[in-house]
Length: 331
Image 1 (cartoon, rainbow, N blue to C red):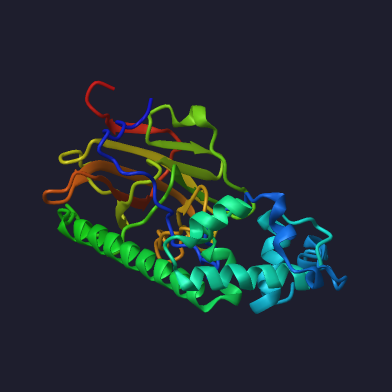
Image 2 (tube, rainbow, N blue to C red):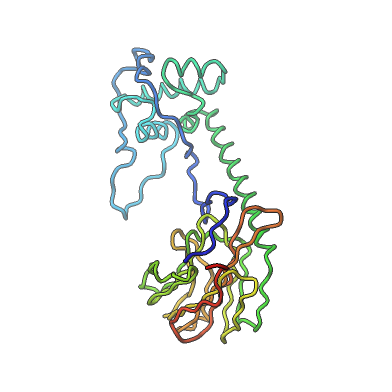
């Protein structure tokens, strides 16, 4: 049994936490005619150093840090060697490869509307699609890469701000008894397909069958919460010294499981990725807890994209049984 599926108006997934991006990670077209070398001056065919893909990424023990990423001419040469771009033979000398790159850069910089068609007919290359490859040796191409990255940063910032506004607009939980601590996260979280809480040394991996109620599952030393991948979650965490009253109004699904806390921080983390939530323990108390999870769908004002709303409660309590207080309608 699973949570209600998102409707067709849900946008494609976004990554949980913004990964570090290479300043040169831009797709390039890498299909070219073998005739490219024939167009080079005879002098360019002189022998010289030949950097191989292995030279660019030599094997080394995992504990040994690699050199910093190459820049300039070496970055261009390594990109061509590693991606097998430009259709040139692996034995092509570096100076020939670099000269060819500078010719393509000149064509890209001129931005003559008729030149791309001529290059395509002669060499099978669309120079307009090569800016990511040429950027290390071509200022005009590098400017295009920087503009693309700036546009992507703006788009991400706008999307992130929209999700924060949606979380801010969700109803604030009004506890029926005073919690020992409560945290309402201002920024949305991206938990992927779920989150897990597990004791040190136990490891993640609650069996899927133990998630039969569709929201919460538990096994020895760990608890799992199922969420929907690609959708943000607005999260509130509350820790109590005493068992809080059960609340189901305003929630689509409410379930509870037991967890034996062995010490240290007690926090949920995404099943995949590095997302972590704040500590749920009661002032570091070890021992048995009950973990109660509340789930609901919601939309921002005028928004079509759905988001997930989660309220997670923790309190000292015995029992490992899984209790469902409310299920989605028809499930």
